[in-house]
Structure formats: structure tokens, C-alpha cells
Image (cartoon, rainbow, N blue to C red; front, top):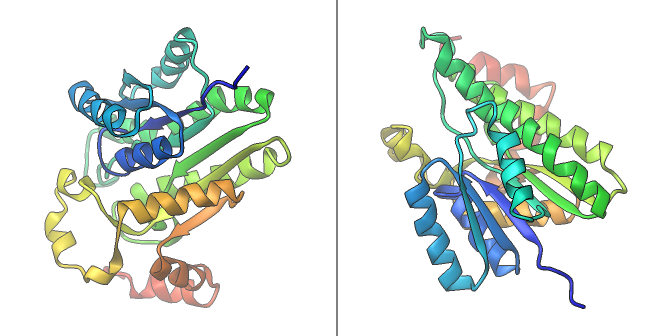
Length: 260
């Protein structure tokens, strides 16, 4: 009797890196469970994936800024008799400025989406992976989580948390057959910047700082398969990262930051 096909659950799967993860994992033979807020867009992506790769695609419309969403997703997926072998926590947003946005509700929703929901998803979906002796988890972080920047005090710190979470989970799960990795891309060509109103910033930056989504996703998949808890994506950023972490260079970065 043949083994059932493995399933990959991808959040933020209606655009950007989420769609690219879906294509690359489908090409590797994974059936897909796609999660995003935009149901109509999600169904369009699902139809394309089915046609191109011939895989089964299950969709769930969910807003992970809702504190109940991860538990509801786990229940829905379990009720559909689906197991999750590969989890990509990719949902995210640029977020509000911690000091400039006066209302707390948008701040709380951002923190829920970027940190708490990822932790909540790991809490629900990793234990069954442990029980089966196989699992892969990629938490999409950012190179912004590796360096201090005067950039709103939210995005970089939230990604730094995902890096720390992934590294500790990787150590905790050593020898269980479950691998966890934080993927840290630099600037990446997706629709993220257009939706965040950052196209002017993107167009003003040198082109050599930007990488295509397929390279970033390939780096992430390769890293988790090799058991790397942190993967800096892109040759330029892999070269810069040791400098950014240096006890000698890091203070210099802070001094050169605008506003200092």
C-alpha cells in the first residue's frame, strides 16, 4: 500500500512569496493547503496550481490577525482529515509605526499577525509532526530582523522574534525528524511593496539589492531540508550578515543610521 501524499500548508498564499512557495512545493509533489484572507484570489491561485502541477489544493480563508484563527485552522484542517507535513508561516504585512499610529488596535493586530499567530501555528501543527517523525517548518522572517534600523520599531523586531523562535525550536526538535528554519530575505521582487505603498522607495534603490522570489524560496526550502535554523537569502545579504552581527560593526551601523 502506497503512502499518502504529503501536504504543505502555506499562509499568506494568495500573493508574493506564498504563491512561489506553493509552486515550488507542488513541483516537489506536495499537495497544498493554502491560507489567506482574500478568498477569491486564493481560489484563482488554487486553480492555477491544480492545472499546472496536478496536485490537490485545499483552501481556507482566514485572517491570522484574529487571535482565534490558528486554532480554528487546526480544527478545520483536522476535520477535513488532512495532515500537515510542511508548514510555511509566510503571512505578514508592513505594519503601523509604533509611535506614529495613535490607536492601539492596529498595533495589536500587527503583533498578533507577525509573532503570536506564527507561535500559535507552531504550537498546533508541530506536535503531530513529532508524533509521525517527520516535519518541515519555514518561518518567513527578514534580513530586517538581523540589523537595527530606525524604521517604525515594529517590522524588524517582529522578524527578530521569528528568528529566535525558529532557532530555539530547531534545537528543541533535534533528532525528532522535524526541522525548523527562519528564512531571512533581503529586498525581494513581490507585490509586497506595492500593497504597502512603498513603490517609490523600491524604485529609488539600487537594482543589485533586489532578488527574485524564486531564488528566495529555493534558498528557504534548501535550508530547511539541510537542517539550517537560519537562512540568509541572497549572496549579497549572506556577505553582509556577518558584518551586521559583528560586535565591532554593529555599533557603527547604529551611529550611521538616519536620525542619530
